[in-house]
Length: 343
Image (cartoon, rainbow, N blue to C red; front, side, top):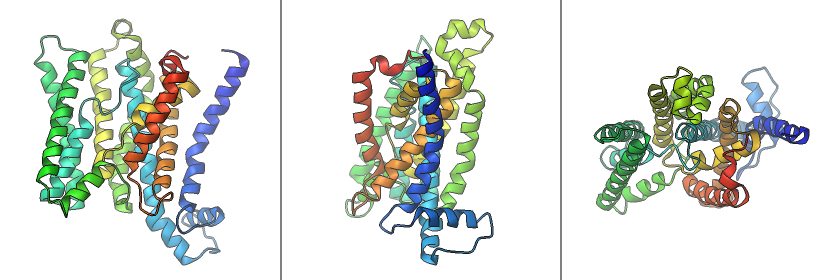
């Protein structure tokens, strides 16, 4: 790597780290009711320090009760999905892998849809989504054990089967749901949205999400070992199978939690790790945290667009799929293997 390339990569890292904070402040200020950034900063600082209010009470209510919980949830979900995608691509040694590979998203989607039909309380929807997301991955593990050649290929194929199974069950639920009452809510929820975000939702998901992400951050260097290949990792004393399954469980928890509170938001865990890899390289010691930072900024940007570009809010999962597909096509057409071998 030349000195100029190293300099560009350094500036890219600084930008990625600052990007979530910048977009966070802009997101709190942007909306149908515009609030100056200076007022936004003052409102946030007033919760930590004693400041004389130079903003209106209406502005403070909008920031603290409407936009702040939604922005925090977007940051958490974006970081979690991107980090999970980075880990999955590393441990499976495949740049086309997403964190929903083993059926967790479809399982959680079915759980949420089922709860909307029979027990449409918010907390039950969250719990049902989380439980069925974990159940889907457990079934994928169980199915992979029935194959004579147990391994990653068997696990991936089992995940595809379980994902298709729960996707079919979602279609069945939509077919049986009341078309005038329940069905529109199911369809909108499955497309992903942060409209139901609240302070309580942020408090519920922040501790488990941040805990899983922190463990991954501490062990991120081990993803480098798994991405080198099983033989090399074993020669260095790693228990490859146990370590790989441990990462899968952590990422499964993250995706199940995100789907339970925001519906299915696709492409974030697939596209963002590629962009981060092009900017900071393939070393997971840097790639994992910078991918999380970039994912947080990206999803918060998408959520800000969903509530500002149209009078009727656009489903978040729909927008991330549209933008993600375009970005992925550009990456594939301009960088061979999407920078997978870039170090």
